[in-house]
Image (cartoon, rainbow, N blue to C red; front, side):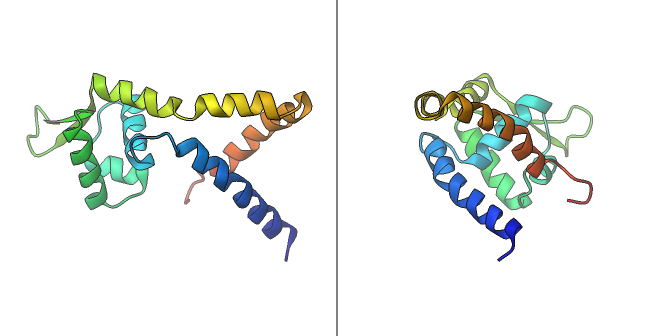
Length: 142
């Protein structure tokens, strides 16, 4: 087994329980939280643009938007100039829900870092964050 393969497996196995713990307090799926996050950061969007950003099928985004709309977290509005185009917009309740979802698990992780890791380990973790972000950074053609 190559060193890269071993590192990849070790990282995956280390992150899996952490990811589960962080998401255990969520009340909506990561996909729906991603839709809310995109709308929060970029403003209104169409379903096709959301599907592309979230890398899911148009059918899946339609279902997600319908569920978010039923929870009054988003609204759909026809375009003023092209009534065929439907804009999806975040509501105030959607902003609040997004903040709650982002905060889910945060307290636990903050405590775990401060209580379980030495100052040196905390610095190592701080240094690892940019490296981890680089793994998921958008690459042309990705």
